[in-house]
Length: 330
Ligand SMILES: [Zn+2]
Image: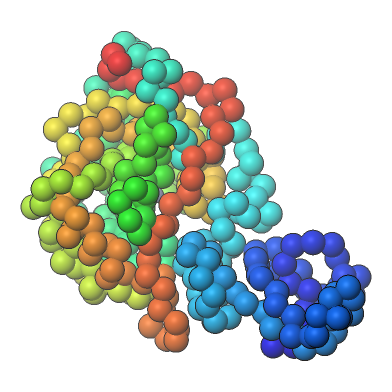
């Protein structure tokens, strides 16, 4: 590729070349080493640019690089770059966080969490290029959560997952520095106060997300129907019918939780989420976990390079003085 683009970090080259802040490249110049002192000149000669995959750091083609970055990040660059387009990424109420269990304050006035999922109606399953999402009918209050830190009921809208490419990483929240292989997010919105999910997503009390850690252990019978459906939404942008799935089967036996005020963990990163992170994890088998890692792609069907959908998690963000409350005594 001709080397006249000023991609990457660094100073402006003065000619108003479009500056793409999200490209991290290794430049290998195909000029004789005697030219190396004149690197600025070399930019105007033929150069070889090696694109490194954002997570594996292996050299990949330009197209694979673009695809992988879109996949990991939704095309907005990696999590560490989101602030360039979404300044709120550096706000004081960002998620996820590392929960320090010893510093979480037991709050005896927190009510038990109540999940009224009996009448829930799942509609479809889809691959949005960041995760696999199951959506629910949410035109009335038949499926809501209440109690805990919530002052009224919140309607179930969708659930999705975050996971890694290996056992030691994948969850967004961590507990005392420990990552789980996967984290389920059940997303609810405040239909008592706001007219639509979109409106609620921009308000400080608009959303309530329940985070549930998935650890590996024995096979989880409840999740089989979901993992068996993943092949239908292998590619980004695909959707399939998925009715009669009740996420009640994905809840642990205890609903003890930590809670804190936070944000969406993907752009636009709105600080609109009351987080409720369950203490008890659920167990799925390594084989079930592998179905997430190996079936789904960040890429669309038309894209030549196929990127496995893995490592779709944001790392913990600064607490900035926020207090994490616990529904239980440590
Ligand atoms: Zn999520």
